Image (cartoon, rainbow, N blue to C red; front, top):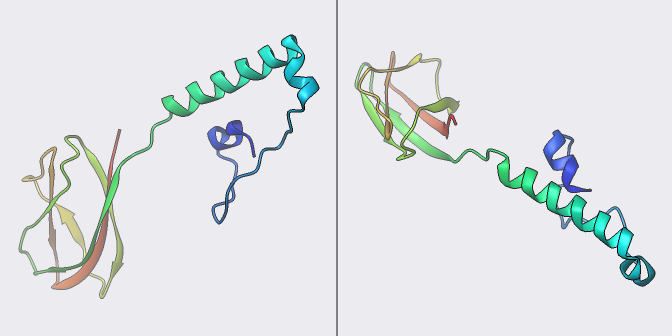
Length: 123
């Protein structure tokens, strides 16, 4: 798999080390033109990877929510976040309150429940 497949959104192997799709031989390395093209491509692909947004995220596992009781989730991302309930033990509706700020997400629930919550910086 090459670096451009990471950028393009193509699927990638996650259960092992990645293997190069190309092999550079000793004659290739001694060809100045081929070597310059290879290095140019590598530098371009690395720059694209560095520019890519990798949002930080945190999970809050098995948090008890009281009905109508605000619950604070301190993430310290310093920005707007996306959030979603990953797991719950009932069908309560979870709502963001106006007490939410750049470092803390504040939620309430319509029913008492236990949730696992994922919070991710919005970028």
